[in-house]
Amino acid sequence: MKSVGFYIVDVFAEEKYAGNELAVVRRAGSLSDLEMQKIAREVNFSETTYILKDEENRGGFDVRIFTPKEELPFAGHPTLGTAFIIQQEILRAPVREVVLNLKVGPIPVTFTYRGDAPDILWMKQIKPRFGKTIEAAAVASAISLEDSEIEGKFPIQEISTGVPFIIVPLKTLRSVKRSRINLEKYSSLIRGTEAKSILVFCPETYSSQNDLNVRVFADYYGVPEDPATGSANGCLAGYLAKYRYFGSPQVNVRVEQGYEIGRPSLLLLNAEDKAGEIGIFVGGKVILVARGELV
Image (cartoon, rainbow, N blue to C red):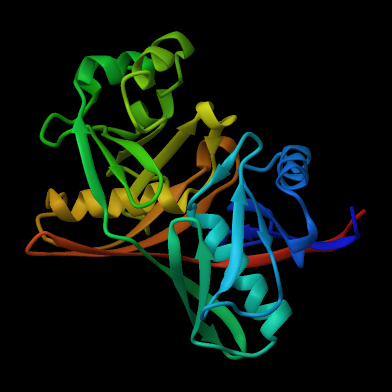
């Protein structure tokens, strides 16, 4: 394997060593699928991304995303983190937009700036697809809770904007904190679902500045808990808009995630339901932590 450069960034992070860690490998077109998978397994972050070339192709940069177990068609924090590296290390100039050509299709990322430095990056997600609803009892047992801890005013539902998630509304922060995967019940649940990951949320928060607290469990992908999940929160944004969770088809909220595992993260969600057509944007900050070479 030829020597290739890599970067470590923290995504959805208000400060260094918070948010969700991501490894970004540059000029990775010479790597085989097996090498990409081995590197992702060795790095062992929830995802590792590969920028195949420093040049644009069909109006965007070709990028692939791998978990330690498999390739994904789309994921949120890898999309934002990789766009940041393209802007900072390849383009080296303020730009309004960077497009990533992913397996799911082209995903545009827009930039806001504080001076010359990127501030908030915004990712537009594809139209959400709403799947089947799930009985509370099956989900409650999978996350080690009582049925009564689930908010019955809203459904438990599979939703996808490229990767499907089971969205579970809970009543209290105490229930979010108590959530734990019961592997036997979880395995039984996901045998009958397209989605293999579970997002739980509630309107109580650790920080008074935030609107929702979220946890995401992805044991199927080798990630017991993710500190910040853009794709899952994009699904959540669509859910909030469709079901008027805040009483409106418009959503503009701050979401905290990762507090329970010591990686506090902040995600910004904008969504709007216009006659069943839901537009979704997920935003956050990205911070460069390290750079080096894989040999």
